[in-house]
Image (cartoon, rainbow, N blue to C red; front, side, top):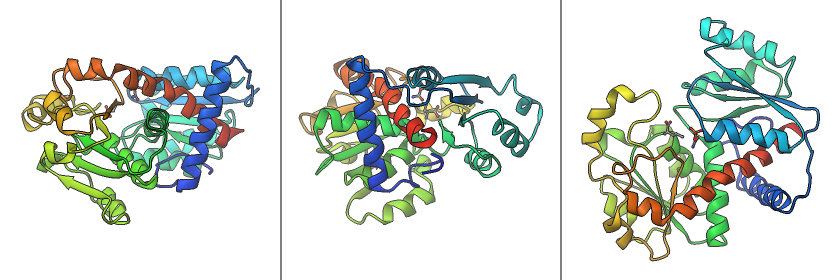
Length: 301
Ligand code: CP
Ligand code: NVA
């Protein structure tokens, strides 16, 4: 693996390889075993959107691996004043050992990888969020023991999270069901991907159909970063697409809940369900650190 641009690029074996390394790095950290695998290496982190978890977990992760991370806000970089990504990629590649980027268009991430000469990590685009879903998969295995026979459900917008969840869960052999309002369904590209898993994927406009017998329910905000102007329209469209007691009652009795965060309580999830599943949700947030360290080691080690 040269870059992490999408989850589609990873085979089942490569995914499991990352998750196994993530488990090992988590064990080492918990037991105080140093692991300076990236000593002397520098990761540049370009942010065109806000972040709490991604920024802090990558920065701490590089530190724990013996390297360092540079926070590069696009507001301060010349990118913000129009310097092309092709030039930025070639310049940064001469200083850095890897580049992490959070931005809008997936093409920007692909261009960074194309024109640069160091590994590039996608830390969220409008299209996907592979780092988050690696952490989610790690958390599911931690709580459930394996992926075999599990049903994963996504309730809400057919967005970046939905896309990566569908890809990651199908790849690892889980059944996936997604419920979105008609005008917010997943893109054709992900529909095509899911066709490669006949009998394993279901798309519906009925959240209760999707949630039935689920082993893991995922949800995400109704309006993502960059969609703030559509907030009111989306609040109307997504009414009924809420993870609440009624929904949890038709899921499997040990059903987990995963949320990438930040969460909007009272919208996509009730405060009660959120708090009842807080252990799983905050373990998921913690696992960002371990899963990303595994990615950094695979790409930059
Ligand atoms: N889940 C996630 O990516 O969080 P941040 O936006 O805080 O980085
Ligand atoms: N779908 C959300 C995920 C945030 C981590 C967004 O893009 O804003």
